[in-house]
Amino acid sequence: MKGLGKIETRFFAYIQMMELKTVKTGDMQAALNLSPEQERQLLSRLSKAGMITRVRRGLYLVPEELPFGGLWTPDEATVLNTLISAQGGQYQICGLNAFNYYGYDEQVPARVYAYNNIISGERTIGAITLNLVKVDKKRLGDTVRIKTREGPIVYPTRARALLDAVYDWARFDTLPRAYTWIRNDLRTGRVSAVALVRCALRFGDIGTIRRFGALLESERIDEELLGTLEKALRPSSSLIPSNPRRPKRGKINRRWGIIAND
Image (cartoon, rainbow, N blue to C red; front, side):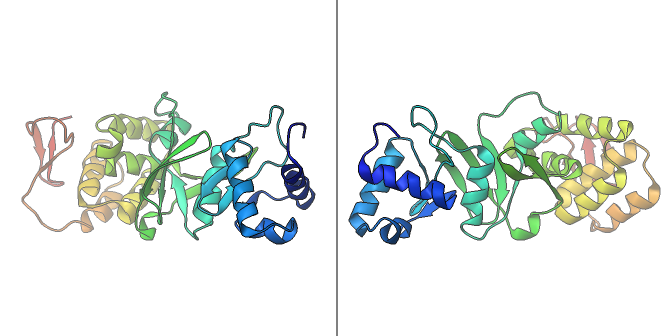
């Protein structure tokens, strides 16, 4: 710990002895016999020096061991788990990160996209930039916990990632590409029609269910499954395009109220 002051040296010795991963305002006052102002200045100095990382006001991530050179930044799993759990929330990776994970898109995202039920907007924590999309808690689910060296991180299932690509197409610019992803996964057996239908009924809106219905019908899936989707729709004469970014011209599928323009 060469180059550190006396208080800083005591700080790192203490967190390593106690095997701490986070420190909150007030923790060091009793532990190191500091006044509130001394603690505030200590945490501020270490954060500005890049030795610890501020997650939000009053909460810091700390390294298990100070790296060579003193600079440290936490990984995305640690940042996301700490930020969301500190406020009693839930999250799941979404968008470009999920599409890249499942091999639909080769683009490696420069930031982490996540649905959650407490925070909206962009946050930069250490070297990690988060794009947080706040949704109703009911829209969270159908997930898998992926183990990483740094800890678990919550991803959508393959079916849920495909659902999001259709439901949230405007945010992620995924139509009509998502249709190709779905067709390929159905034909190769990587995803089942049952999983897609269940996901659409639980997390989709009317537009998503219509688009899923038309696509799955074109793939000749079981009629009983199509009927399950159809029951979720109310009779309507309105039409929506399969590709919202193109003119509404194409063959009309009356069953699903879809203009096939993709």
